[in-house]
Image 1 (tube, rainbow, N blue to C red):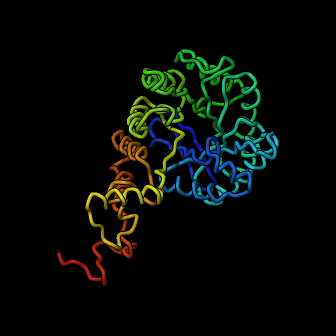
Image 2 (tube, rainbow, N blue to C red):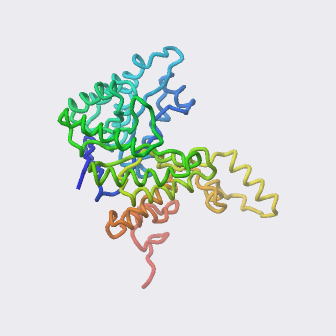
Image 3 (cartoon, rainbow, N blue to C red):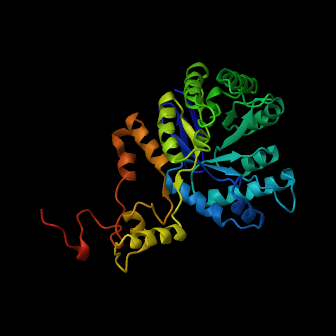
Length: 353
């Protein structure tokens, strides 16, 4: 069985056909996050710190690190990204012990990240473009790391799945010329939005099967691409991920965290509840209120996509005896009861049998 080994200083994540699905947390990425981009330019890493910890707690086994900020003060990413990448990698691996995925379109930032990352990170990414192959594959060989291979080339992204398969095959063959084995290549076959292309799901499932059976490689994707532009994106993602896993996909770059409910939404719901005539206890806190009325939580927690992945791991026997499923679904300890022994009650007394 093909296994791709990714390591931190103390932990190993194995991406493989007979392994639990590998969740690569995507949130440390300023692309499309104006607030985070502004913070990073200002030297504020507080959001990065929160996102790193929250993603690991939610179940991410690898964290993607992207430093792609276009600074207002200096729009040249070749100058700004390498030192920012170094700072973020060092910061994150000082907070959490999971392996990292070094992610950039700037070769200098990739090499800087590889140089300071502890263990054996995943490199994100190489494409079938000739210039990119010549820039990235020597780095993969030099640092002896696995790499994400994205199925587009100099002609762009094809809607034809056969073309995307051919690009992936080309990358695997070119990598072999550098002495890079197929088990160190994780192919992203590119997921199209199902709202724009009705066959997008069927395409990627067929592609994943071909990549597994004909090239023997592991696979990944940007999981949320499938639902882009549609309502209830979580519902689509929740169905897509187990189906992709069933087709043989072994990892995904995704957000494992359900973001906390903010005070504005809580206030609006309280007003709605009170207007309906329901009298709430004066001392009901926001977390209890959110749980009672199905809003979610005031704290970051594992998202519904993680629930779907854990269920699929259980159903495919990649969670033997359901240990991880049971652990993830244990009710949280009530305030003041953390750490108590089994059967303990307030005051230290036990129930009689």
